[in-house]
Image (tube, rainbow, N blue to C red):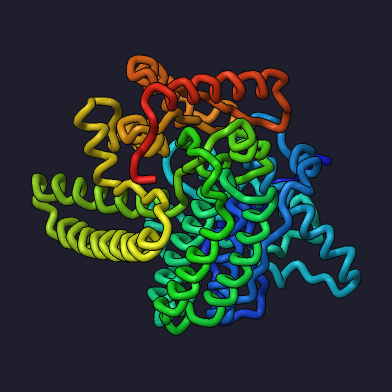
Length: 457
């Protein structure tokens, strides 16, 4: 049906009025959180609940057909999945509540990114899709953005913003730790399924911790529980199982984190004899803060040349703000890893400054270009130099930053003699996927037999 001019104006106005920062502290709305990384999504929801913000993690991948029905196929794969997730959840709520369903009681949480990535347009497109359903138009889309380092200003009261950001960041680091714990113990578990069951139970225990202790910043109590979990996990590992090749995973954050989207790639690699280290979620959060600090420094240089006093003050203020955020984040992350590594040697994160230095020193790429390619290219190079036995790049089909990563890094890995595998994904199942993974793992075992692997494990 053709829209009238007035309807078109209302739709464009909806992009402005119904996407953005909505105060969650003084509302009785339910925040709907998509499941990208399972543990991380549940930790974040628990943290929100601790601050009095009702939050639920939506089921994922059950609405994929809905997502495909309301996309053209030109969008990258996470767009189809996330649209399907929100439509499926709301349709299920309509069935459950009947006449009591009120779209105005929900805020769908969908952050965005600046720059060329299509992710920056997800929430706009999803707004258009929701507006096409008259009974879903009142659903708001709450959005944070990389352009201000995922600031919470405007979404919670000023008194809460700093504390919620700190608790939220810790929840990200702890979820990374639990993921890395799973990948560390599952290849060596005494009985199949023990590691998965243990991590699921541990996730629920940590959820309660963040819900209880996050709001009052009793972070040591959270980390005490985490330490006990790490200690107990050692009993799951069979010391008789020989060491396995170490495989690093990088790529687009959603695809490498979402087990359904990547067709359970990490488990498939483990089934073929790998031990996995996947790039973390905290690495991306640190990167966005680091990027904003770089932007402020660049802006300051230009402002000094042009002697723009007000701009100089603004850039200095931003430099202090983002430098403080980055210092806190990396210090807190380092503290957590130091505590858990004293019990079980998990792989720690790279510092973002070190990754930029890797790119500069080897003339591989530039942070001036931006995108996740900065992290992936530098991360792959560092994995290779650290003695990993192979690297996998996971990304949506046609993803620009990951395609750049592949073009830059593939010949370099060939020169270094380190096995490398691209794994692009859409909603189809590639017939040669299994053969490609088996071949890659055969090469990884050859590398392992020739060179061993990181000694600190």
